Length: 140
Image: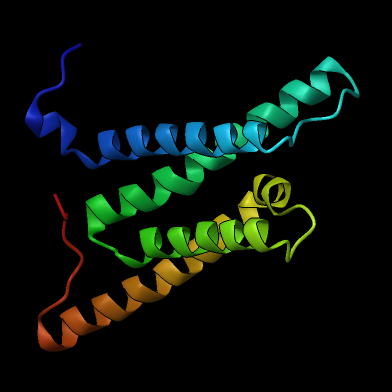
């Protein structure tokens, strides 16, 4: 299948490509930092790997889709803030294992991002209904 320039701008394609790249980058950082899954059994390691890969994919794909489809800017910004917080904790040693926590508690972090995004969506829908501007429209 060959992608045209209009296909690449589709929010679903951007979300899938962005989510896949994000998952690869985070897992590369994960492995290069010496963090690993314990050998408590093959099934446990496979489950943990898939859980974290799905999580990192969702952490980027969902905000990118919301941005592309509804032009909600808070979702990618909140995701970048969460990642930046994890990076700063890792660099400065403020948290004993920030990267493994990031891979483990991703549903909570995604919920945080989506809560912020819901606030933006409600604000923009309200503004659209009152002043007729700032409505939810596709970004590309």
